[in-house]
Image 1 (cartoon, rainbow, N blue to C red):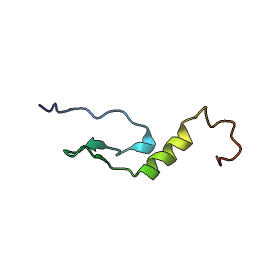
Image 2: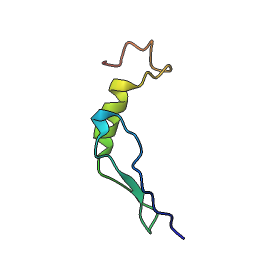
Image 3: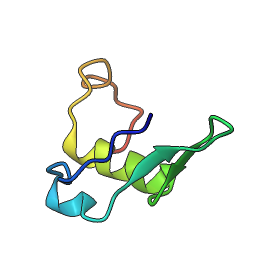
Length: 58
């Protein structure tokens, strides 16, 4: 049985309209492309493994 959500989750203002689902085939479907999500994450999330690397553009 599927449960229906009545409320939308809180999201960052830059991700307004973002929705992600899994279809019957098990494929992930999203309203944002992987590139858009990665751009957001690179801008907003500090990755401690990459902090001291000189070969990565910030």
